Image 1: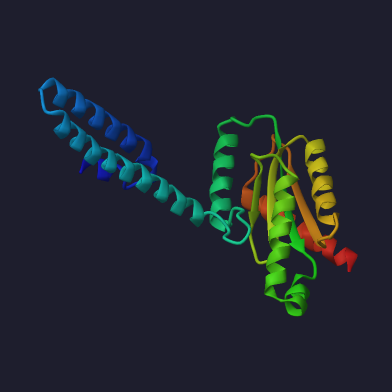
Image 2: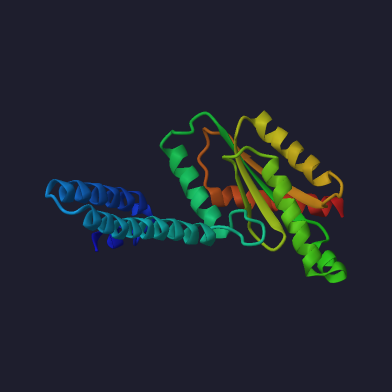
Length: 219
């Protein structure tokens, strides 16, 4: 019963598995010491092993369910919920000076003419474009950078580094989308030096405004 309680929350899955291991091995040692038959000990081992497997499996499934709740099912990127949690972690780290010395850049990517793709080629083709776009964006940044799908045809990228690094990321994102078959998109950018006070929501708003300015100037 204690093992099952430990498996209820995914955060405790490791402790649940560890408790099960100790319970299994410790119980077996005690049984052998008390002189129980090998058949009885083996049967007990099977039962406890099943409980252990069920515990670990339950913990992993709970983690999977939670991860799915933070991921966009089409592209595999973070969704709005996952992005919000990633933003909260980033803000906490920076306020605790864990990331001191790095600027922050937010990129908002909006696909151009995406509705026309859906209308003329169908939603399956549109889904293919979204998946391809997600893969190109993810491949253009570092593994620990944040990439999310925040709307039907909108994506965001959050990265930390020098101003030169942020500029290089913009160039890489543009180049990735321009690769054949090209994905037409407009990228808005917001940037804040580390010494300035800021909120993620403010950076997102600034990137959104910059994106619409770029759209207007190119139309």
